[in-house]
Amino acid sequence: VSVRSELVRKAIFSKSNVGAVVGSGKLTAIYESTAPEGAALPYGIFFRQAPEPIQYAFGQTSILEGDIWTFKVLADEDASTSKEPQQLAEDLLAVWISTLGLTLTLSGATVAWMAPTGDMPPYQERQNNRYIYHRGTMVRIRTE
Amino acid sequence: MSELTTVFNLLGQTVVPAIGAAAFPDTMTITAETTSQGTGGGMVKSATSNAHTNVPCAYKPNTGRRVPIGDKLVSVGDYTVVLPTHTAAGTRINLDPKTHSFVVNARGNEPAKTFRIEYIGDHAGVKYEVLCTKEN
Image 1: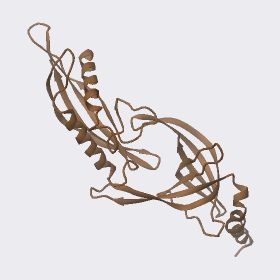
Image 2: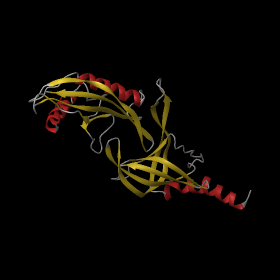
Image 3: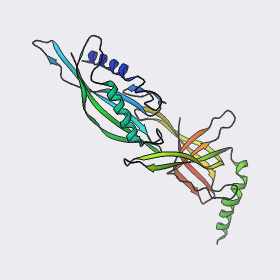
Image 4: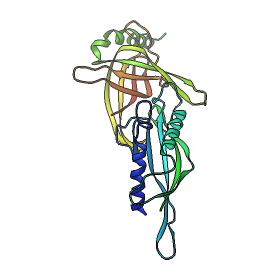
């Protein structure tokens, strides 16, 4: 349910917003759902893509809750003078997913399963005289 | 050669460039981007150089809007930038929307401003009226 997902959201940001992922030559920042005006590319966006059905034990006791989360990196042709923006976004995304790992530290719950489940279809959008490339991976996170 | 041809050539290639500094309130640098294809098929903007410097110009706003781009809101303004077709030395300014951008020089308290070219309007070789966007 949303309360549990909110715990996961905060744990994701806490584990993502570290020097291995954010900094000079890396992502400029990580945001949930949307970036603020003026945010500089390349940056990371994550959001709750879809909930999974809650699994119950006997009766109405929830034993497993889960969501699919999307993690994506946005980069444009001005973000690097040596890498294609597609490659830059993929490289930064790989570091981010690797840093997230296969578990999170939650307060009041435990991660039972966390692993990438597939990639987001890549796409790009035009901004004036350049394109912004979106590259992402979806991760299934189940908690108990 | 018709009389008009002579007049327009004189205007575009001699008169406007000669009065450029007095007729336009600003000067700008026309920057050029160098782009090459990377090993994965994408494009890499490897460098930016100056194609022309101290080009007389004037700019005015047309309209603007705030649009969602890249999962964030961006305030974008449409501007018209007017500039001569020739430098004071008589060299034609060959504008290329694929690679060129305008950086209007700072003036007094006014900071430098970057304009990205959308479309180049050429007034019979006398002056350019270039539709640009400026990200605020």
